[in-house]
Length: 117
Image 1 (spheres, one colour):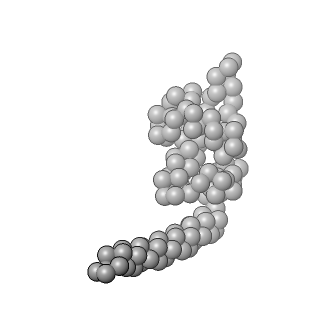
Image 2 (tube, one colour; image 1 turned 120 degrees about the vertical axis):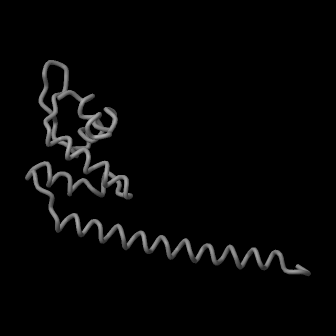
Image 3 (tube, helix red, strand yellow; image 1 turned 90 degrees about the horizontal axis):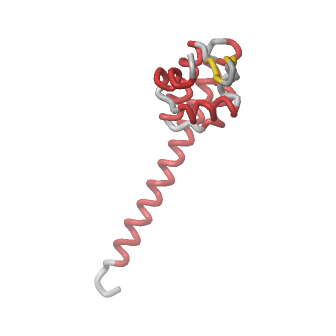
């Protein structure tokens, strides 16, 4: 299938698909003249990349996972779990930092609005 069909089936743009290819996230497709020709496993791979991005993973963060799936045609559950655990820990850290910042803003707001200040 050509890049337009892959884009349609996976929900990614052709530009994103070319980026994934350039980064090594999807295998270089076969060529038919000047056109890229993708296989159906590429649909699953691009969909997985987009799903990971939708939940906050950067392309760099998912590169090892996607490379493993591209090579073996199987998802490394251990690697996926490790990445998800790391992402959740970072998210919890960020939430705590944001809550502390919010508390500081509340305190500043109260201080600025106290009578006589």
